[in-house]
Length: 315
Ligand code: NAD
Ligand code: UD1
Image (tube, helix red, strand yellow):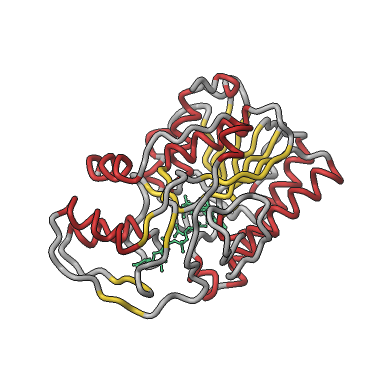
C-alpha cells in the first residue's frame, strides 16, 4: 500500500510506545511526515519500542498523560491524530475503573478538543470488539446492539458516542476501529494484563505453566498487528469523514485450539491449568469484516498460523 498522503503532514500518535502504536509509528516515519508527535506516559508502553526514532528531527516524544490538556498545549499544527493510548486490559479495568475512565474517556475528550482547536483532518482511534459484549449472533456485524460488559468496554463505547456527537456538533471527522484480539511482535508478555498469545508464547518458551481461564472453549478472532496498522492508515486516507469498523481476520480460534497450535510450534509438553473464568470475559467474539473490506479496501494479509510463524521468527 502507498500511504504517501502522510508525506509532509503533521501527525500525532498517542500510545505510540505501545504494542500497536510502535508498529504504526514505524510505518508513518517511512512516509516522511513533516512532524510526528508521540504522546505516551509509558504506563504499559516501552521507550525501547521507539528509541530508534527519537533522534530524528521530525519526531517529538511527549512523555505525558494523554488525559492532561497541558500534554498537547505545545502542539500548534496537526493534520491527523491516531489515538491509541488507553488502559487496554479488561481485568485491569475492573480493578481500576477510575484510571480507566480518566485515561480512556478524558483522554479521548482531550483529543477531540485538540482536533477542534487545530482543525485536524481526521482522528483515527482504537475502539474495541469489547463494545459488543456477549452476542448471540456470530459473526458480529457493526450494526449489532452494543452491550459492553466491563469498564473497559464501556469506555470504548463512550469514545464512539463522543466521536459521533463531535462529528455532528463540531464537524470533527473520525474513524473508530473495533479491533478484535491483536497479536504480533512487540506485545508485552511480562504482565498478567498482557494479551493471551504473548503470555502463552513466552511461558511456553520458558517451560512455565499455562493457565486457561474458563473451559478454553471461548473463541476469539486473532488479528495480526500489521493488518490493524493497515486498517488505521486506510481509514485516515479514505475520503469518508465518519466511520466505525470491525478489524479482525475474519477467522476464529478457541483458546484450547490456540494452546495446541502454540504447543506444537514450541514443542511444549505440559498440560494447561484450567482456572475460573475471568469476570467480564466474553465467550464468543467473531468479527464480520465485510464492511471495512468494502468501504476501505481492507485486506488482511496474515492468518493466525502465518502471524504466529512471523512472531516466533522475530522472538
Ligand atoms: P499497549 O498497552 O501496548 O498500548 C497502549 C499505550 O498507551 C501504551 O504505550 C501505554 O504506555 C500508553 N498509555 C496508557 N495510558 C496512558 C496515558 N494515561 N497517557 C499516555 N499514554 C498512555 O496496548 P495495545 O494493544 O497497543 O493497544 C492500543 C490500543 O488498541 C488501545 O486503545 C487498546 O484499547 C486498543 N485495542 C487493543 C486490542 C488488542 O488486542 N491489543 C484490541 C482492541 C483494542
Ligand atoms: C483483548 C484486549 C483488549 C481488546 C479485546 C478485543 C489485551 C490485553 N486485551 O481483550 O484490549 O479490546 O481483546 O477483543 O490485549 N486468557 C487465558 N489465560 C491467560 C490470559 C488470557 O485463558 O493467561 C484468556 C482470557 O480469559 C480470554 C482470552 O484468553 O478469554 C483472551 O484474553 P486477553 O488476551 O486478555 O484478551 P481479551 O480479554 O479478549
